[in-house]
Length: 366
Ligand code: GLY
Image (cartoon, rainbow, N blue to C red; front, side):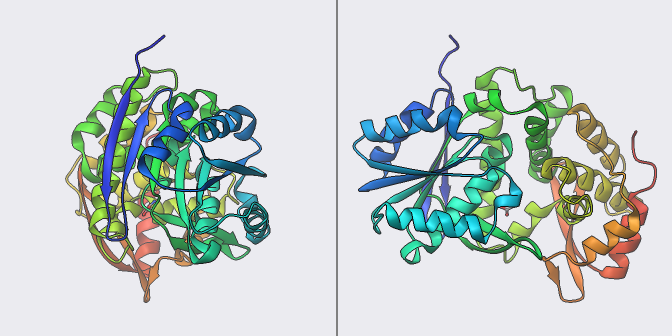
């Protein structure tokens, strides 16, 4: 049996301080870790019908052993269920379980579960605490940290939500072994993004040694913790996305457009990777990025098994990007890499964005 790996990343934000614990064999410690960090009467676990059969029993047992009263609800898996109906059902189940202001919601699953359970916690009795137990790579390196919670409306993704920093995050890398290969690779999109954003060393390591699902768990834990630390530094400086947190949207303006134009058939991380390559090609053409930056990004993205472009009609991509909910006035704040490890934000008009999207579509690496 491999050695136990443990990394702890402390997060400091204006609204709450908490630890992100990343490692192996952590699921059976969820109860003890929560008991050590938080006083609470009951724990209410939200999971989905993919994750619950694999891990819910272990987490419930661990919570009971630590002295929590435990109740759970299981929602249908998938973004198409991240809606008002499911949200309402979670809240009704929380009320039926008799949760109080001293109870804690435990989000056991990927980004969709984390978003919904977090928003339910933010809403119930005007806000109770949430512990995130992410089980996908995407949620470990990104969505479980930083406090964004949301559900979708028929007119768009994440249109209602709240900022609620978790009280604790417990990421057991052993859970990654049960992801589909597509879902694992999907998470790497955000890992590459973090390297381009803030860490050339991480980027070079990824380019030389693409992340592998069956890789050394201690190594995976170290890389996930590094990603959490990058995000922590940004969120700690700007919890509510008024300024520097917008840089985390690197690759997302065009990536979201790919996602929406594909009818959400493509994974978020795949679209972020393609969006990152797209904006890097355009940015380098405009002289905003150091020469060679886009080539390095494309090579790294391709090495992970992620796409460097997206086969969607440009007019559709431009139409989607123009409706991005993160529009600022008559344009968008576009994040561009100046080199590997550094980014800048440029306000571009929608016309400039359209030109840029056309430019970025030229000569992608096959
Ligand atoms: N995923 C970007 C953010 O949390 O701000």
